[in-house]
Amino acid sequence: MIQLTEIKKTFNPGTINEKLALDGVSLTMEEGDFLTVIGGNGAGKSTMLNAIAGTWPVDEGSIVIDGENVTGLSEYRRAKYLGRVFQDPMTGTAADMQIDENLALANRRGKSRGLAWGITKSEREFYHEALKELNLGLEDRMTTKVGLLSGGQRQALTLLMATLQKPKVLLLDEHTAALDPKTARTVLETTERLVSEHNLTTLMVTHNMRDAIHYGNRIIMMNEGKIILDISGEEKKNLTIEDLLHKFEEVSGEEFTNDQAILSK
Image 1 (tube, rainbow, N blue to C red):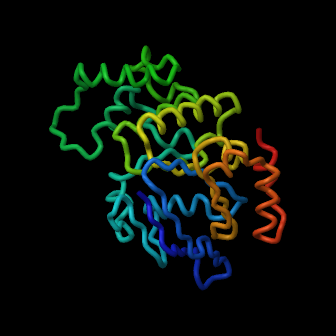
Image 2 (cartoon, rainbow, N blue to C red; image 1 turned 45 degrees about the vertical axis):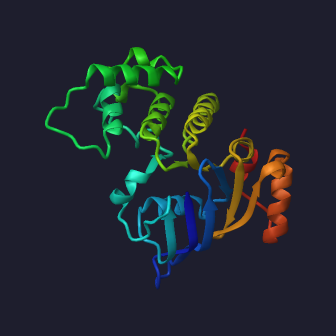
């Protein structure tokens, strides 16, 4: 479903601020893979997600999604393949619009639209049932402006919006980092359920080692713009934080120093 081949990206080339962000990253994901990405600050995690999303062009390499080479496609042309949830709960929704209107925008993405905006009865019933699955009571507040929701409620809604059209690839960029631990757990459980129900190919960047180990069927660790560990199957199921830290030190020759990732619960 995803094939990255020797992706390279340098920011501010030729200046004092030159930064090699991706250094020949290659990655293959099969349909239905749920891959978690861990690494220190500046390791290249979010940069890799942005490369897939087409936020900016890569310097070298190719990006293939579901058999189509999208390397040269702009971000908006690539959007039809992707669902995305950002770290900031305010990013993925329109605050001045109602819950049902936000869902309608997401559901109609890529479809031909006439001049009529009104939400049909069948659409409203569909959104009601979808919201019910979140277990947040939002199905009874569909005409509430999204700006009145809590951060966790908005992030859960964004997640639902990102998966309504069953995207080829779901990109989650530290989508629980701004939430309190209890709310983050709820959003992660919702994520796991939606990914499983729809067999979504998912790439989840996280700063939390426990979450990286617990969720998904495969984990990769990045360092200095490279993938240095790729663990799946039984090895991942039996993995501990101590194992992961040891493997990192073994492969990179240095200690993992991102305290936030080590200590997060």
